[in-house]
Image 1: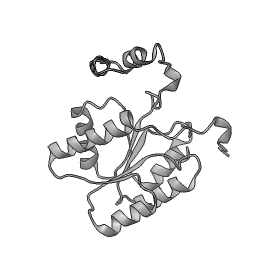
Image 2 (image 1 turned 45 degrees about the vertical axis):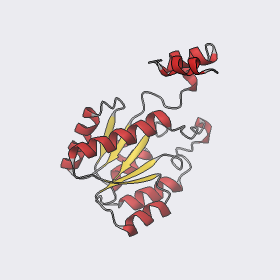
Image 3 (image 1 turned 135 degrees about the horizontal axis):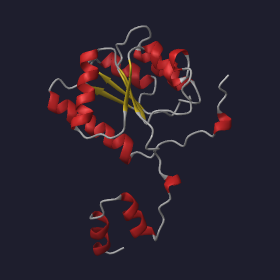
Length: 188
């Protein structure tokens, strides 16, 4: 591919057009890694931080919907379609999870441990988004296979920038783990 071809690819605004241009009508909507109906799950008990995250997502023009749960029990109920989330299809997992460590009822680390212990959620990207920059917290998060650990910036513009970068990486750049076929789920 010559440099002229690279320039024409870089000017493409629509990924569908770029794939069509590069691969001769390669585009197939079934091949997209992320279903546009999927959401980002925010596990955050603090209303002010949740509102800040919501505003940051709006300002960053993130189009993936943000769903919030307020504590560890509700997070696990959401993932495994239990309690008030029992009517939700447990196969409809978020694109990624923003998980605070210091949440009520069940800690963020215990939620992460439960996510990694279940085949249905084991490969779900979990980003720790917390105010704690302590080494012991980072070590514990990575010990339980967090995908990333981000200390919440205090400055609003830095917070918006951090969320924008996180969202871009996990929704546009990352090639997600394949979803398990429906037959792999034992929902009993």
